[in-house]
Structure formats: structure tokens, C-alpha cells
Image (tube, rainbow, N blue to C red):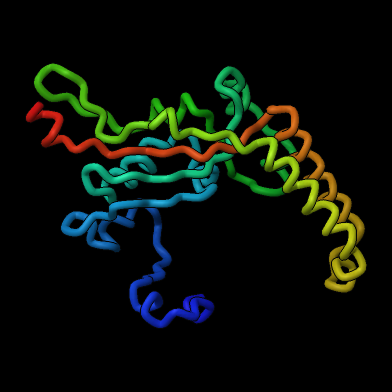
Length: 203
């Protein structure tokens, strides 16, 4: 994968590691040299509701004080989250078994907390002003993917994907397009900021 990067100097600064996110701090030596920035793009959907606190704790462990993490997350509305967790749907059954979307409120509640001097200090907090909804754009993207899929349907067939797969994939793209277009689901880009504890306590 690094070979795709034509800049030799840049390749020397890149490390690719396959590891569990819970081991990232140890793998990259973050206790001694934490990161200024972290990016997590649509990975949270594979974590699961019960493990969200551990996921955010791992991000916290990898960030330096004052550092930021950018996340792209697919989410359901806060008011529908409880019923979503109790049920299932086409995507969880046929496309991404074991996956689980989040909601923004669940993200906030799963962030690590701390207590000092009788006042609560949140080590990692959500910057609400930097939260952006991209759901409508995602609906247009899915429509474009569907058109491209249909335009290459002969190629898809030649690769061995039968009619049952094609109908399932077509339904998946349309299902998700409708979900984003109607705000039944959404995709957000959010920003987490790690509090500089020393500055807070000094203040």
C-alpha cells in the first residue's frame, strides 16, 4: 500500500500496522509519544454499544493533551437509539453482521470522565460546533454508486455474482440511499478534543 505513495520522503514517515484498536497505544508507544491528531473513519460501527467506552478510552490514550480526533460515524437519531439496539434490520442481517450504529448522545455518554477537586473534568469532549451532518450528501453518493453498479452489471455478472447477489446489492444501495435522504439514519463528521488537564487544574 505504501508503494502507492510516490513521495519517498513521505513514505519514510508512514507506518502501517494491523492491530486491535485497544492495543494501539502500546503498539505506537503513545505513553511516551502520543499523537497530535487521530482519524477514525466509519470504524465505530464495528465496535458495538457495550464497547464504546473502551473505544473512546483507546482514543484518549493515544492523544496528547490538547490533541484532537476526527471521526466519521453513521448514526441513528437519539430518540430511536434504544429501539434500534433492541432490533435488527437488513444491513445487520445481510451486509454487516455484528455491526451497530451509534447516536450522538451515546457518543457523549461513552466519553471518558474524570473527577478532580470536586469538579468534573472531561478528558475527552465532543466539540459540538464542529459536528457536521453529511447524510443528504451520502444519499447522493449512494445514488451515484447504484448508477455505476447498473452500468457495469455485465462485468459484475462475469465476475460470478449471480442474480440473487445483484438484487441484494441493489436493494442495499437503495435502502441506504432512502435512509439518508429521509434522515432515518445520518452520517456525521465529529471532532473530539483532549483536555489539557494541567492547564485546567492550574486555572
